[in-house]
Image (cartoon, rainbow, N blue to C red):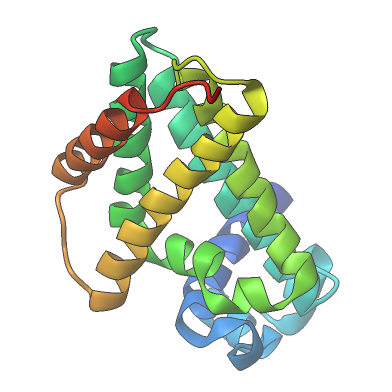
Length: 195
């Protein structure tokens, strides 16, 4: 049994352990017993913090999503140059992926997409990232079109990450961020208001 922790510290510990368990086994393949055992606590302790496996998984999706959006937000606020903000946003994203494959798998894996409630949580994260990116797109288009392009950029980063994570390849997040931001920036230069 692990040492007695303050409730908020225990909750964080349980979320960290649950991330590893769910990323490895998926939502349906993991049980509350698996999480409790991996955390070194009893099931009643786990249930003091989360009423069900579903609630635990939802809390985990929310926590992982918040960490990602915080990383992107923190990285892009220090500069006002659109191109630099774009690269910094991609760098924060790819560093998050490189440092935490489990978080990426949890958020963007098929288990989170097959369940409507979990999929909504993922869509909120994707939408949050797109909303953060949209103002960085400095082209003469209406706001809805800008937001659509922001979603496309989020999809570009997700697609590149999915390939690297699924193949188990290590990568330099700074190099990848520079390449993807160059690709995005070059593409955005060709975008303009439609007649």
